[in-house]
Amino acid sequence: MKGLVLSVFSILMVVACQSKKADFTAQIDGVKDSTKVYFSKLGENNQPVPVDTVEVMNGQFSLDLEEGEPQQLNMFTIEGVNSNLFFVNEDESIEAVLYKDSLRSSKIMGGKHNELLMTYMDTLKASANAMNKLGQDMRKAMMNQDRETLNSLRKKQKLLQDQDIAFRKKMAESNPNSIVVALALSDLMSSKKLPNSDIKSIYNSFSDEVKDHTLGKLLAENIAKMSKTDIGAKVEMFEAPTPGGDVLSLKDAMGKLTLIDFWASWCKPCRMENPNVVSVYNDYKDKGFSIISVSLDKNKSSWEKAIKDDKMDWYHISNLKYWNEPIAKEWGVRSIPATFLIDENGVIVAKNLRGNVLRQKVDEILGEE
Image (cartoon, rainbow, N blue to C red; front, side, top):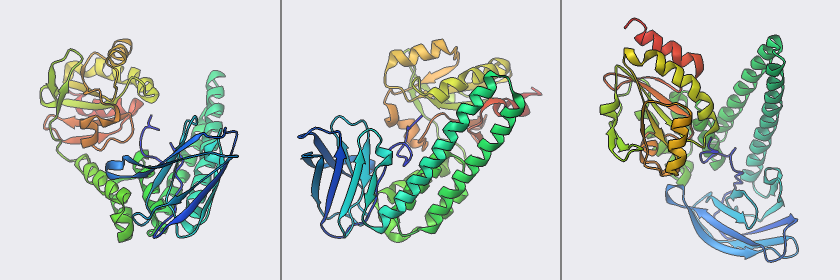
């Protein structure tokens, strides 16, 4: 799953603010001299715009940062290191201590926004470590068929998830003048754990500077798209190529109840959920239940193989454009799996149902058919 989106948790983001030139210096061990470091800034549509290239010498590199928009998000990638760091230069110098094999453990010093983000990142990292440990314990309990322990661990998992969401929400609400809150809200939107009304309320509390920021404007666009997919909204029709090359529209795929399923062959959570969706489909297809899956694949053969392997015997479409899939972008899909249940009039009746909850909802609507 997307790491699968612009998320502070999927790639380390380091933020500060800027109104004039400032120095950025970094120390990094284990990197050879002349290793290139590529600097970019965040431009329109969240796309990186190249700024400069420097080289590592004696375990260090530096750059004079050019003036940009207030709290300008910048990014650098290190040749041979499979990750990025995002930052925004501040009025004062920025110093970084980087760890090639563990960039999430890197330290950024200089500026109140860096300090705020470091607090945010450290908390997220601790939460992730706790969730990973809990996941290991749950798998062990499942192997041992220890239901009592498993139920107890599931309660702890729910508590950790609630605490994580509460922390992100408080972070976003408490710092309306920092771009860090836009990153926190972006994470909250990706988590799908917060009602759209809360997302909008938090965004409205942001300062004009944050709202006018490139990322703030992108958030506004995503929130507007999110409103189009609220429960009770009537969906807009779409169409795309099928595996066979024909063009299929949502209108032609709809039944009495239709599941719009955003997925991909490379998405492990999607593939894990597919057997449940297949079971529900087979039990209710004769009562008017239809599914149209929109794939975020980019390789056609991988897409077709996953459809066959997972026995997904329903409608499939894709433009094979990965995260640039036009339908996913229009629907504001920022992580997968993402599902929308619509009635025969194209009105959204439920979203992101998983497991037995999906079956219960389908049975509630079609069970008496």
